[in-house]
Image: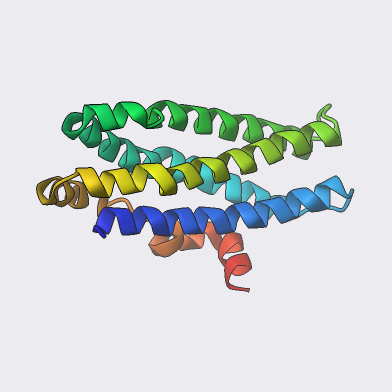
Length: 178
């Protein structure tokens, strides 16, 4: 397994753990129990900061190399770059819903829960498809030279939960370690 694939899988693992944390908060909200809004904001901030800006571009770079090496195989795979746009749209829809709830704007509990669950389930489905189809295709298609070039670029884009930026996500770290 290449450094880039190992990194992406670790990031998927971290994102899954965050989605689990978020889902527990949404469950509380659905039961009319006060969720930890600070934790929810921090999780949203993480998704806006890291996957949307750094994780997906890594995958997009790999996907573009697959398209050059094996256009037919890439064509049979879902369009990863388009899918990342949909993921980003769901994230921004959820972010707006969370802000509205926190500002006590007009939004029903059921509407917020539906938007939150759509985001959570959409993320899970997206990562599962990448793990099942995209990453194996990348490992089967790309050459050692491709991986060397990819690894050189992605090495500078570390998950902030695993780096010196972890302090920015203090609440998340406390929940993940506790």
